[in-house]
Image (tube, rainbow, N blue to C red; front, side):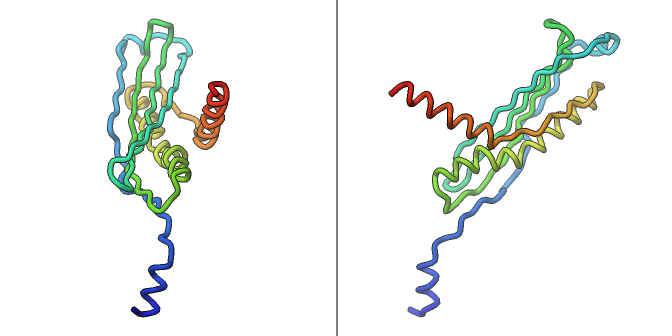
Length: 159
């Protein structure tokens, strides 16, 4: 065996985090009171909900979904529109610790996907005749750490 082969065997594999595919899984916009709603005035109440999920679909390959639901109402019973977007990506993660994999799936991947979902929400609401909904950036890292702290507190209380 040559020295070159021995060196390659002893070198640890490099960590991998790559985007394999970004795709839109689902998008819908419902405006149940159009066109009459365009004749009404008032400041709508906007409710935004964002959720993320991650699943391993094959060894080293993970599917991450950022789901955004935007509901705009003039009154409790008068919905302007309901916009739902599921933006997804397939990511390859290899030679990374379990803890770092969790961080990549909960923070890095959603940070990559969210701008796509954000653009879809703005464009679809504008194209349906409403002012575009401009979603604020989300700090997925802060959410991840808050969920970790909450889980630790719950574990301590259950112990």
